[in-house]
Image 1 (cartoon, rainbow, N blue to C red):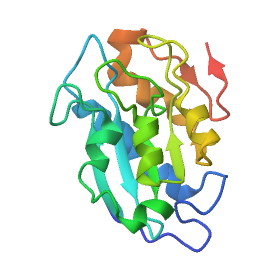
Image 2 (image 1 turned 90 degrees about the vertical axis):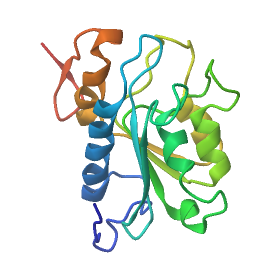
Image 3 (image 1 turned 120 degrees about the vertical axis):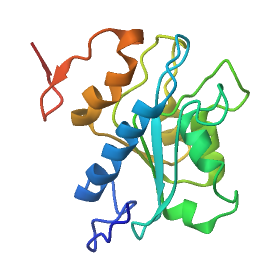
Length: 178
C-alpha cells in the first residue's frame, strides 16, 4: 500500500487524526490477525509510514520470533539511522508497551530510540499482563505525539478475544455501546 496524501493530510502533519491515519491504522489492525495465537501476549500489527505516505515497513507480533512485538518486528526491517523515521509515523493496533517481561526494551522505548515522533494506535493496552503499562505516557514524555483512534479498538481487540473476552462495541465517538 502506498498512499499519496494531500498536503496537510500526511502522516506526522499534526495532532489531529487524518484520513491517511485511518487508512494506515486499518492494515495495522489486519496484520494482528496474522499473529500466531498466544496465551501470554497480545496479537498486534504495526506499519511504519514515511511523512510522504510511503510504507517503510510492517510487522506483527511473533512474526520472526515468539518474543517479537509488532513495532519491534517492523522497526527491525529498517536501518536504525533511517532519517525518514524522524518525520514518519508508527501505526499500531495496540498502544506500544512501556514494560515487557520477555526482552529488556519495550516497544515505546524502541520507537523513541528510533527517533519516531508520532504514533497512532487503536487500543490502549489493558493490564492483562503488565500493570501500569502506559506506553503512550512514556512516549508523550519524550515529546512523541500519540493519537488513539478508538473507532478501531474493536478491530484491534478481535484477535485478542481469548485474552480479554468479547470485544466491546464502540461508537464512532469512542463511546461503548450495549
